[in-house]
Image (cartoon, rainbow, N blue to C red; front, top):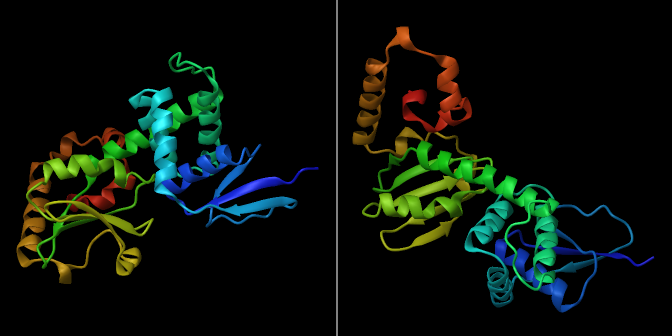
Length: 256
């Protein structure tokens, strides 16, 4: 019995694509790709630690684009960001299927891997749009608009263009406390940051860190929201349908 090969990577997208390159370069059959944070309890396996190589990753990414459309490539990336357990192996199977074909014949939804990737991509896309709608910034004493989030999927890379375009003249941070990293816009570029204290915080940033004007604005907004609400016309069921309760923690008007 030939032992199965498990490829361990750092959890990044480039790291995953480096695994794909390794599979093809070394002609590995039936590999399993896992994040280094996931335990391996399987017996009779060979473990390979894959070093992230951006050049190898780029070669795979360009090769995928040659065989698919830009839309399919975006769905591929969204599916990876879902972080669903085992999604890497579904994506690898998808790549192997795509690379086997001599020509592209469009999206074949009869293929189980293609169908699953499409379904997962739609879920991630919905979460992306919700984050764009429900993120609420608070102005801190260092003049940076800051927001904390905890999305179901790792959508921060997807929401960068929206916030960079909309808030191009302001410094801002959107921090994912679930994954302990954030994106910081410094008026020129986007940087990925990690702040240990943020991983222990709640959604509401400490009032000690906020400008006095920000506190006043939040009170004013909460007062306005309450004043325009017509209690006799409230439909809680419909309200929760359009604004699920799990997003209320982001909204100033719901936390005052």
